[in-house]
Amino acid sequence: MATDTKPKARLPRGLVDRTGAELVATRAMLEKIRAVYELYGFEALETPAIEYTDALGKFLPDQDRPNEGVFSFQDDDDQWLSLRYDLTAPLARYVAEHFDALPKPYRSYRNGYVFRNEKPGPGRFRQFMQFDADTVGAPSVAADAEICMMAADTLEAVGIQRGDYVIKINNRKVLDGVLEAIGLGGAENAGRRLTVLRAIDKLDKIGPAGVRDLLGAGRWENPEAKSGDFTKGAGLESAAIDRVIAFVEAGTGTAGLAKLDAVVGESEAGKAGLAELREIAALIAAAGYDDGRIVIDPSVVRGLEYYTGPVYEAELTFEVKDEKGRPVRFGSVAGGGRYDGLVARFRGEPVPATGFSIGVSRLLHALAHLGKMETLAEIGPVVVLVMDRDRAADYMAMVAKLRANGIRAEMYLGGSGMKAQMKYADKRNAPAVIIQGSNEKDAGEVQIKDLVEGARIAADIADHAEYRAARPAQFSVKEEEMVEAIRGVLERRAAPSLGLDD
Image (cartoon, rainbow, N blue to C red):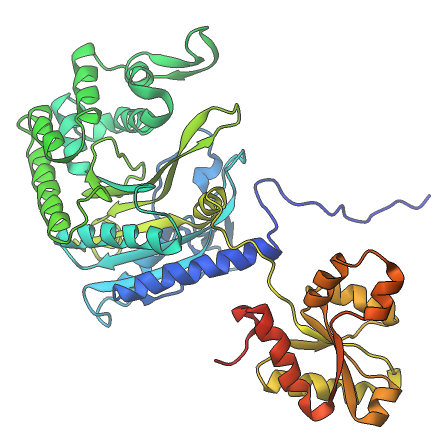
């Protein structure tokens, strides 16, 4: 008996297909981001999606992330290769490889897909797009302050209004000072430090009481009923927990910095971090961004190990509904920080660097919530219908003439008749079709049907006979007038994406 060996058409978990309006909206948003980055003097860089595994470095492991979070394979030379996990590690490799030829500081931006070998879940994908900007070779925290200002300008450029976002800044040195003050310094306490970091990072989701539990013995998924999954805590003593909580609840701005002086105690790292935060605050104030757009906030904790100084997060402050219908803040759409150790991995010498990364899909999702995503499907090409099969050369010549004048156009290449061709043009979202049968050819004319205007008129005509008599938005022009007539149709559509010349 023969068996059916056809593969099943199915999408792997954690991946999505994207088409139509979402791609158009993404492209429009990326161009706005790119314009701001270039306004600040950053230049484009593209690195491949595959790197040598050892070049990607070590990442903070999540409990539910298998295989250290990367997709890896061996090539024919037995070298281990991996799909890039983020866009920062490949930048570090590129800078180290071309260090002597690059201007320093080196300012670049990159966008592209990154890949995480993670357990898929709601909002958790194995492939997603990031858009990064980084400054390598600038030791001054002025570079960090500038990145935060650029983040604010970028959010406004894509349509997030002032007041609907905030850029929060902290410093890993301050946090390291707190951890040192409670006895968690040194390599032997690395595991417990990561547990503390994860606990602090959940502040927005579980509140101070939940963080306190995770800093102590641990926390149930449903604390009141003591049910669900149990997360083991850091096992800190009560006094140490109080100090960490005092750190995350110090508050924002100058007053918060003053409280942190007592929290970090005599830690040199903590004092250095506070000095850097004060310098950033002064720079932000001088540039006029201290009006609520950018604030110092000790609750910001970026998880990745390689951040060595200032860390920052772009948070959207407007409310959305969660899966249970409860109002929650939208949350983070971008983040970054200073990572002075990444390039040093390759060169064996300190190379200061700072940068931030936008989660493209998440930011697009935010714009959709605000009703500011450009969701209209892209207007398709003008379609030249094929009325006489033996005149394909004539129709191809029409298409070539339209394209030569900067107009998106295609000749129908299927084998169907007039009715099916019109349905095809509708599915392609064509603004117009061009029709030339034998009668039009003999008269040296073409028929142009404005599909958008025709649909609008047809909606107001109830009687089919009236519709046929009206032949809405269909007109004849001489062949030599075809291009200008199509231009008129397109200009009425006011669609800059059609490729018309300025």
